[in-house]
Length: 191
Length: 155
Image 1 (cartoon, rainbow over the protein chains, first blue to last red):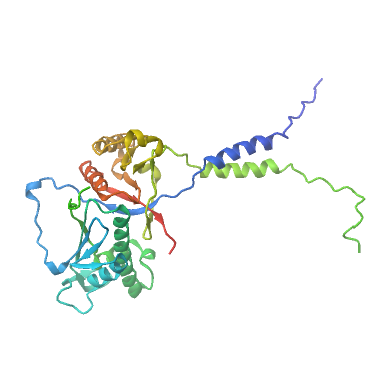
Image 2 (tube, one colour):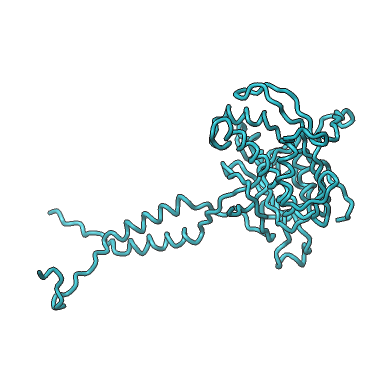
């Protein structure tokens, strides 16, 4: 004689599920890691044979940050908010001024023969500089670089730099090479 | 027209709760999938600086974190109030970084080892000296991909 199997009471199922749910609600951290991406230069293999590249003074935008978080850009005291426009002017050099970087004729895919700036940013900070200031300077430089690239991308394709294909982005990067070299920090102000 | 009965003679039928477990389970699965458990307990106070030009850090399993900040109050007796480095769960010095990077590489699959990114989670009031030392150590360990962790500001 087959007996009916009694049905399992499922009324406590909701409670169990709620318990688990609350546990996961509490433990969840949904922070997305964001940050400024940088690539460090490798250590030269032979330190004595370090290639001493001579760069003309007009081709260098030297940014010094001291321990009071003040900026000296090419011998001129600037605030961080002015840095972006200064950097853009430095790379574009629209009036071909004597004291701004030279340009050289280069062939860039998609763009053809164009004048490419030989500019170079040299960033030096003190050991006593605040980290937040350093990040703000990096941020402003990155913003200047992106704005320059967006501008060129807009002219050519009517799109922003981020929306371009990889080949096109490569071409824009060749057109506007923003190089930042970070010098070893000085210890002028003590720790 | 008596769609809405005003006389409350009839008892209201109870709302069926039979589908409640399903709803809760759905939420549960969502949170189970979205959860990332915190791997380390922070021993230092960190408030990362703000920045606008940020990129999202993809592939979290290929990221090793270095924390720098002032030790939390309960550690201040032993470790002082100067910013310290934390690797995994312990306080460390700059000299430990190369070993840390080596062990991080060791724990990854062979083909992924050179894709490791180091994420620097540094408190905004830290001085650059310690950060520069870390960068030098990373260069020596030839771990060149670096990410300065920042909060994103609304423009």
